[in-house]
Image 1 (tube, rainbow, N blue to C red):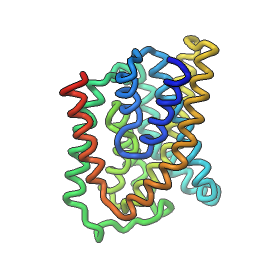
Image 2: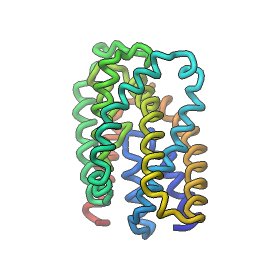
Image 3: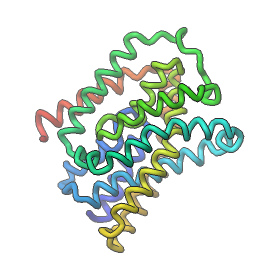
Image 4: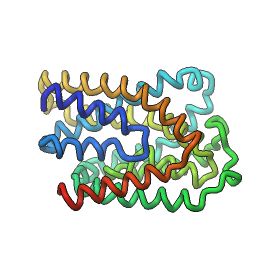
Length: 254
């Protein structure tokens, strides 16, 4: 890996972190196209630079987070399933970091989005504000999030699907997904770096910093665009995209 690789992967992370198409999956596939081997450091890099994107959420939703202590408790409750499973299955999860797993999960997730949107009816979705999400709903959305430990599933995709199935509007499910990323990705990043810090060289820290800053700046732009998009359109396009990109990699790249 060099600085150019870190910048490209940072851009990929910033674009895909909050879209329901799997940021980790896209970084793994991008690394494959760039000729980068999935070393232990690269796997950690693909997790750690997501912290840059999460900081973008903190900046954009700072006032909302500051004003609602109850919302913080709901986010922590939503984090619990992923936190427990992540600590328990850490080594097994790392074994799934491969392009083929990503491709299959992109296709599966895309099909799920198409099915959910087929039966989606706006009048059935009553929760419009993240502050109105119940503690039970927060926990159940957290269960959906835990599915995203398999690369290619998409953390944002699984939590958005969970939100839609539990009665949240498209906009509300997306916002809760964004906010739930804060405790989840902070914990995942620091735990991953702690577990693998002995493998790092001085240049590695430079790559992590560059990738994280690029992801932060890119995310600031993408979040605003995404929220405008889902206010006018459905998730069908993302479902189709996931199936197409997963199929292309299975047929012509892997």
